[in-house]
Image (cartoon, rainbow, N blue to C red):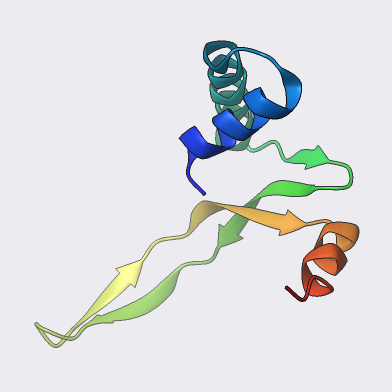
Length: 94
């Protein structure tokens, strides 16, 4: 499912115009992105957590040039689903 399909589904279920729903979805994603950029996690009870994971510095290999490369420490965004959400997906046997 792509963002446009999510917006259409929400608009159909709520009766709100697609343009308004798109604005809300864009703002939600913007708030989550801004929070993670500032190093602050976002917790949505019953759904999951958008968190910042810290990756340590490590040594990698450039196979094509046969050289060693140092990959610096960095942060990456991650999503950790809530237990209830994971169980719902796990138990869905369509």
